[in-house]
Image 1: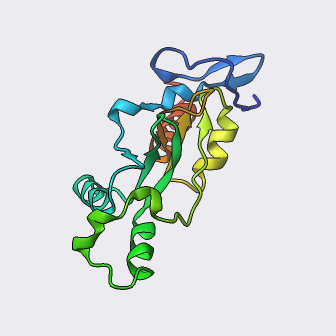
Image 2 (image 1 turned 120 degrees about the horizontal axis):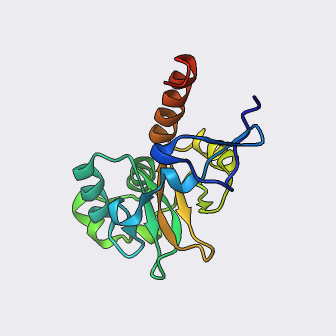
Image 3 (image 1 turned 90 degrees about the vertical axis):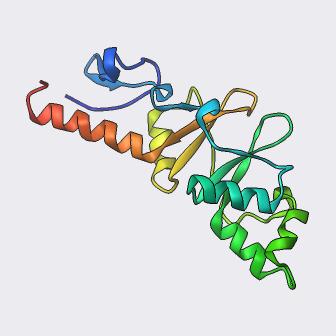
Length: 165
């Protein structure tokens, strides 16, 4: 059987892959962690707030959201370190005067639209620990973590190897 993946059919009960004419399909929404469960930062927060929130949650990167709720990029620990290095005289105490919006970001983490194909999601997940998900208007609706994608496909592979049990 050919294993091709597209967005036109959701997984069956329990997230199982369904087959249509020999092609396995899956909806990327199956992997979505909704915005209300995601740690993200508004562009209006300060560098200090970002550092403290990332430290508290032990995250090395977080999505950024603008005033309209649209995905505005991803802030990484590296971005914060480069800002400290490249700003002469900047102390930790002064980080409460710098807005996240004013911190250059070195890496562009591309988002995926909710109706994107699983192939598109996988191509982004290769280089991103998480993939931001947006709606038709670019509004941030959540993330998909690489970990869940790998765990899901590993479980599917194990089922195939055990005869589908």
